[in-house]
Length: 321
Image (cartoon, rainbow, N blue to C red):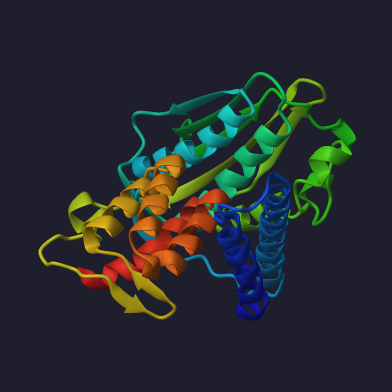
C-alpha cells in the first residue's frame, strides 16, 4: 500500500521539478508549478501520516532502537527547524544541557519525527517572539538512578497563540485541529496524535500546558539506554574513504561518487538544508544520470524530513564500509 500510494505521487513531483527548470517557462507557469509541488508535498505528508497512524492502530508499528550520537542528532534537529524559524522572522533558542550522554540507544528516526512535529507546530502557531527547545537530564529526587540509563527531558516552548483550556486534550485526537482556518489547512491534524502514540511506545507520555494568547509548552521524558563510545559503530564511520567509489547503479538511482555522497551525508546529518540543496543543484548540472537521485533527495530536503534524508543516504552508503 505504501509503495502504491507514494510512487505515482513522487512521479508527479519529479516532473513538476523538471518543468520548473525550463528556461522558457513564464512566471505564471512557474507559479502553477510551485502550487503543484506544494500540493503534492502536502498530500505526500498526509499519506505518510495516515500510514503511520494506521500502523500504530493496527499494532504494526515497531520501534527500531539503534545506537546514535545524541548531540549530533540534536544539532541536526536544530539546524532543520532554524530554516523555518528564520523564514517567519522568529527567534530560536536551544538549551541543550552539557551533561547529556554522548551516545544513546533509541529510535533516532521516530524521535526526530516527534521533535520536528512539535517544533514545526510551534513555528506554525507563533507569529512573533520565539520558539525554544530544551533538552536536559532529569535527576529523580531521592531515587536511585539506573546506571545504564538516563532519563532525558524534552521541552518545546513557544510564544504563539496558545490553546483554549477546554481544548488541550482535543489536539491529540486524530484529524483534530485548533486554530484559525489559515493554519489548519497547513497541516493534517495527525501529527500530534502520532507523536503522542510514538512517545507512549517509547515508554513516555506527551503533555501540554498552554495559556491562550501567550503560548504553549509540550513536554515528554524518555529513559534512554547509554552506549559506550568504544562499542558504537559510528554512523559517520560508514563513510570510510579507504577505496575509490565510482558512481554506481542501485535500483532506480545512479549513486554519485563516494566523495560527493559523503558531502551530502554530512550536510544531512547537521541539518544544513540550504547547503544540501546547493550541492544537489550542482550535482544535477554535472551529470544528468544523477537526476532521479537528486530529485528524491531534494524532495526530502524541501519537506525538512531530516531523519528520512539520513536513512535514504545510509541505505546506499553503509554497504561500502
